[in-house]
Each structure stands twice: as C-alpha cells, then as structure tokens.
Amino acid sequence: MNVRRFTALSFGLAFLYLPIVALVVYSFNASPRVTVWQGFSTRWYEALLHNEELITAAFLSLRIAAINATIAVVLGTLAAYTLVRYPRFRGRTLFTGMVAAPLVMPEVITGLSLLLLFVATQSLIGWPESRGVATITIAHITFSLAFVAVVVQARLVSFDESLEEAAQDLGAPPWRVFFLVTLPIIAPALVSGWLLAFTLSLDDLVIASFVSGPGASTLPMVVFSMVRRGLSPEINALATLFIGAVTLGIVGAVLLGRRSPRS
Amino acid sequence: MRGRATVIAVPYLWLLLFFLVPFFIVLKISFSEGTLAQPPYLPLYEVTDNGEMEITATADSYAFLIEDPFYAEAYGRSLRVAFFATLIALLIGYPMALGIARSKPPWRNFLLMLVILPFWTSFLIRVYAWKVLLQGNGAVNAALMALGVIDQPLQILYTDGAIYLGIVYSYLPFMILPLYAALERLDASLDEAAADLGASPLRVFLAITLPLSMPGILAGSLLVFIPAVGEFVIPELLGGPDAAMIGRVLWNEFFANRDWPVASAVAIAMLLFLVIPIMLFQRYQERPTR
Image (cartoon, rainbow over all chains, first blue to last red; front, side, top):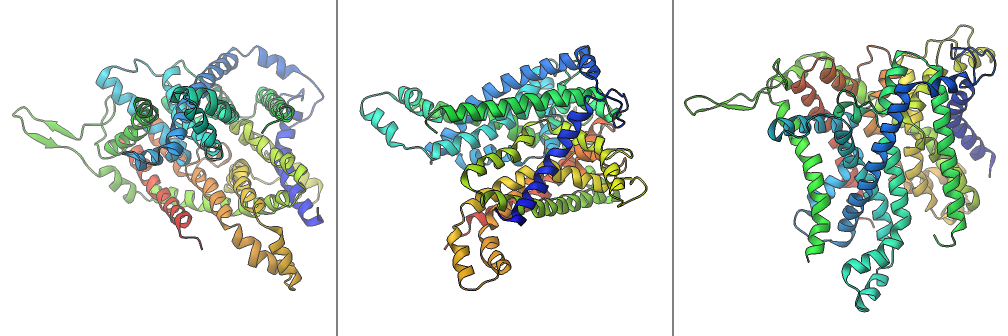
C-alpha cells in the first residue's frame, strides 16, 4: 500500500473511531463533570443499573425492534420477490416507487405523515385507541421493509433460477419450491435484513417521537431528553455498553460467516 | 395464480395504507385552515345546513411560508449546509474508498468492516460524542491548545461548523460504500495502460479513475445530501439555538407551535426540493450507456 493511501485511510479511520474511543474512556471517569478526568471508576455503570426509566425504555425498544424486524423481513421479502420475479402486473411502477421512497424520505416527513394518518383513523374508525407500542412498530415496519427489500433483492437477482425450475420440473408445487429451494438460498440475506431492521428501529428517535403517545418512551427518546439537557456520564456508560454489544455481534457474525463453507 | 396475487397484495396494501395514504393526508392538511381544536385543523369543505358544499380549503400555509423570510432562510441554510457537508464527505471519503479498493483482497473486507461498524452503533450516541468532544474544555480544544494552534478554547459547539462536523461524521459510511463499490469494479490495467503511455498520476486520476467512478460519486452524494437536508438531531444537539434548519423548523411547528397545516406545508415544500436531485439522478442512471 502506498504512503499517501495509507495516510488517507488512517486519518479517515481515526476520524471515525476517536469520538467512540473518547466516550468509552470517559465512561470510566469518576468525575460527574464529563470532560474533567478524576480517576478510574465504574460508578456510572452502577448508576445505569438503578436508572429505572432507562431500563424500562431499553426493554420497550428491544421489544419493538424485534417485532419490527420480524414483520419487516416477511413483508420486505415479499416485496423483493415481487420486484424480481413479477416483471409485469398492474400498478408495478407505483409499487417500485413505494418500496424505494422510504429509503430517501426525510425522517421528519415519515413521522409527521404517519402521525397524521393515525389521528385521522382514530377519528374515523376509533383505531388506534391510543398511540404507543403498536403505532411505533407500524411506523418502523414501514421504513424497515424498504431496507430489507433492497438486501433481499440483491440476493434474489444473483441466484440461479434453474434450481427453482428443476424443483418445479420434478413436480414440487410453488410453495414447496419456495420453502425448500428459494428460502434456504436467500436465508443469509434474510438474516442481514433482520439485523438491519432491528438496528434501524433501535436507533430511531424522530419517527418514534412523532407517532408515540404518553407512557411509551423508547430508549432513543429517553437518551435524547437526557443529552438535550447537557452531558451525562451515565450516557457515556450506556454508549460503551452499546458499542461493546455491537462489536461482539459483528465479530461473532464474521467468525460464524468464516466457519460456514458456502457464501 | 392465487399465490402470486397474495405475494404482491400484502406488501402492496401495507405500503398503500402506511406510506401513500399518509402522504396524501399531509398534502390535504397543508391546504387546511388551522384552528384551536383537537385535531388542530379544519376540514377542506363543509356541508352547510341547506345542503350546499362550502369549500374551506386554503393555500394560506404556503403563502405564510413565502411571506415570512424565516422559512426561506431555513430552506436556504439546509440546502447550503447539506451541499457543503456532502462535498466535505466526498473529499474525505474518496481517498478512503480508493485506499480500500486498492488494498490487497484480504485487507479489503476488514477495512470495509471498520468503516461500517460505527454505523451499527447508535446514531444519537455518535452525535452526542461530538457534543462531549467539542466542549470548551473538551478533547478537541485541549488537543489544539497542546499543539499550540490556539491559546484560547474555541467556541466550536453550537456553531454551523459543529453541524458540518456532525453530518460528515454521521454519514461518511454512506459516502464510502457506493464509492468503494464503483472503484472496486475498475480495471487496474486501464490505469497501468495510461501510465505506460506516459500520463502523470494526476492525469491518470482525472482522465480515467474519476470519470469511471462517477456513478459511485453521485450515489454516495445523494445518500448524504438527502438525509442531511431534513436532519433534525444534529442541528438540535450541535447547532446554536437559532440555527434554523428545515427539519428542526418542521419539528417545532408541529410540537411547539402545534400548527399542523404549516408543518405539513413545510414537509411538502421540502419534498419538492428533494425531488429535483432524485429525478436528475434517475435520469443519469437511465441514460443510454455506450
């Protein structure tokens, strides 16, 4: 690797990682004033354990993220399958647009439009009775499914259709072909899609803030109200736990991926 | 073909109901009159007692956006900040993507993973990290003072500079990935041929590498520019209290002023601004390739 390229990469990666490293270091700072170092301590991790509001919000977020990811994978896969395998049906152009649009839609607009929908349906048919977990989950599914569709689409396009045709020729009905041939082949994309949808949901502040109601605060909503007030050593500890979990997850996924001989 | 109809219908109906219909509701409310009620807007028409229909739709919200210079400034600032942040991200991201694409294959995946990894950690936390670093007595000022660049702490936090930094930092992976995808596909022998024919490294870059990576440049720029225009969290946490960017304006119209018609009009106008670069990109992608 030549020197110039090496320099560009090192500076770029340092830019990406230094803030994260700084948060991890500060999370072990004994001082309540975040930027003044006063010796090593794990007191903020203890404080985190006793912060009921944060813990409740974290479990709520994990639940929403898991439900969202599961439904988004089903809908996103159906959408991707439609786009790749059905080149012709009425309303396809509109469908293509609707699958792609959430990818580039500013969050504030998605959030506002869904809230206005929920307000309208509430006065029309009385649903949803109150806004909270259900409305946040629906909102998250709507944008997550677009991301899942992109990931699954890429996998569907690159796979050998003659495998499906062979199964068909041997007399398998379409649903069997799908579950025995197509599904196992696109499985890695479904896993990545699920993880992506899970992360997007866990990370979303803006859309959840719009469509949530009283009593349903997700983790980003609680964190946001804390950091808006100022620096908080507890957030540093939370960030460190987050970074640790993500790093473990990614390293684990890479090691697992290495072990399996195919793909 | 019942199976096929179901496969299409399920995601289709979901998106119709939760994506397209909400969009039209925003459009509708942007033409409604605001009122002090729950919900705070009037219907577009009313049927009076003697059965006549009275149209109450109004373009007041849009007139308001045009008349009050506050909104024009907010759109201008959002587009300016998004444009320059995209440019900076491109200038930082391009050499990185090139560096990764020209590395030996076993290194590539590892470096790519290093670029993606921060994206998987919380966006909010990464923005917050800069709030910590940019404090008056934070690490950035301390480092600059130790290096002798400055002798007084700089006010970086709550300036537009901090917003640029936040956007470039948060969206850099979105710039690098499409650039890498375009650069990785380039045939290295083209560069070598040009070099053998006597072109200087700069000329090789300008005449061969840069034009061939143009699809990646455009895709990456779009992926940074679009979310940056509507960004709420970064200006809210890192920008000054009067740094009106359009995402923040929409949020405040809705949550603080409870003016739903104006918030909806702000949203529709923002979409109009974003449709232009997206359509240009589509045209570019669909142009006939030789």
